[in-house]
Image (cartoon, rainbow, N blue to C red; front, side, top):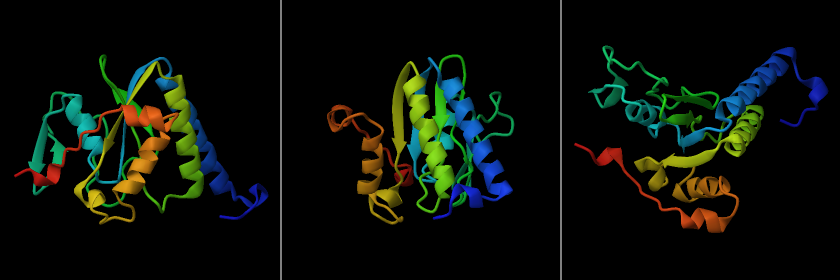
Length: 182
C-alpha cells in the first residue's frame, strides 16, 4: 500500500479510526494489570486456551473444541474453527484473578494498517501493564514449516516482544502439542 494519507477513502479512514480506538481501549484495560498475553498462529488454540484457563466447561465435537452450551461460565472469547482468525483486534478478558490479552492470529496477509495499529496497541499495553507474561502457542504445522512461516519465524516474533535477546533467552520454553492427543 503505497498511497498517501490524502488518498485514503472515508471507509478506510473510519476503519483506521476504529482500530486506533480499540487500541486505546486495550491500553486503558491493561493499565496496572497482571497480564498474560496469548500469541500465536491463527488456529493454534489461543481463544480455546483462554476459555479453558478461565474455567469454561469445554467439549469436543468432531475434532473441534467448543465451550459447552450449558457451561456455568460463559465463553470469554469466540473460538474459531477455520483458517480465518475470529480475533480481529487484541482485547483483554478475564476474571478477578486472571487477565488475558487475546491477540489476533499471526497472518502474513493481514492488512498493513491493521497490523501496524495492532502491533502498537499490544506494545503500549505491555508497557502500561504492571506485570506481563507471554504465552506463545505453536501448532504442529508451524513446527515443521507447513504454514507460510516456520518455527524460526515465530521465534523471531517472540524475541521481538522482549527488550533484549538476553531477556528472551532467560525465559524457559515449553511446547505442548495438542495434535498428539488421542
